[in-house]
Length: 231
Length: 231
DNA sequence: GCAAAAGTGTTTGGATTACACCCATGC
DNA sequence: GCATGGGTGTAATCCAAACACTTTTGC
Image (cartoon, rainbow over all chains, first blue to last red):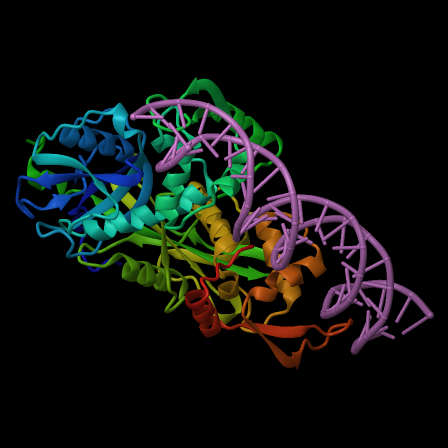
């Protein structure tokens, strides 16, 4: 029935690659590591490694990310898989890309294991990456942009308390457009956000109101009056 | 560095599962097979099988689909991957789900290899499936619904020449809503479609105009005046 | 006062909605 | 004629874009 023995199918490995997105300095950034190991030594890459044969995929993604960058307890979501037979020089390795959206300031990243350096790199300044990681990163970034349009995921990257201008500049960066301030504010009126009494500090202009996303209220509104987030 | 030998990573297998969607009788349907083999003998399942260690994934999807159902040259797109360590009783098997949108009438399906039966099943009548295929099918169907909202993929499932009513009922089925005929027609005015002189035949009411989707025109419009398909 | 960004109001045109109406065909 | 869907027009409403304007802070 098969042109090889059944057992010969069980000769492949698989890996996870973690695309970690964050937002700072008005730019969306991804976490990259510099490889201290062959193949692709000294190349920048997305944190990723082989998965143990008894290990669940999302857990593997968490472990690998922690081992290479020190980032802990990052909730990941699946992106695409990449399985070109020649993508890995050491054998057949299928990789499953995972992504996460984080608040950059909530973490202190530190290179370890075979990572020589870790760095947050703006999406408009990504160098050539190891393996097919350029491709993996760009298609995952496209997925992020899609999600930003239909789900309130921007709040996972914005600080706990953020200004409406920060939120607007995130969208401006992602969608590569300039937006009108007044219209942007009108548009997001329907998103459940809490305005705080607390204001921005130490700015040489009128201090902005700080907001936070009200996830509980969002879930309620979503279920009760089939509200659909949209940007 | 690793807690097992490097070579012990290369002990997994992977498979592809093919979710084939079509449209007929005002319903979106998926192609299912009945398994004539353990495990899950006699269960309905999505066509899928192991991938050879030197085989590319999209090609494997085409091959597997052909071997089980006789469907040839179906262009597939990646959906999600599923890798729970216990999902397959015979070892660690990661599966990559692929999906395709086809015109049901363009194909004659015929069970072969270890498929005992093949059948187009309406998405509102799917039985319990083998392995985690219920889960795989439903998340891929959600993906399809997403795509129907933002890309002109409905035309891959509609006949080459279709009536606007057929198009509307596809969307009504997918989105589970009733739509106003007049408003639906206004909405799709911006989609590049060709109206033909040919009319519907043998219907006991006013025959409807037949349309076809103008893919070339669509690509032109999309690039030249950043048009975004939206339903 | 000035620069800089926060924050709001108004107008306009285009899209969406609800609904009413006429048309062509088979029987 | 009548049942059945095909196909269109209109008016009310909502929404998004463009743009002008006021407010609050640091220096």
